[in-house]
Image (tube, rainbow, N blue to C red; front, side, top):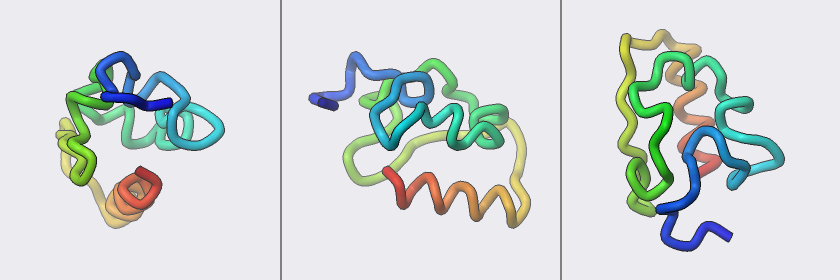
Length: 71
């Protein structure tokens, strides 16, 4: 149960799917600036507020779209 998301790690805990988002989206996790944030810190229930250390190519954008759709 997600609750307010203040105690759930966005990337490390299993809360969306059968494994952590870090495992499902390793390519995005590796370049994300908020690797230790909670769900409440990066998701307001509608929009993801993540930033990345570098720009992504079309594959990266497709992965981002997959992550957004999952959440």
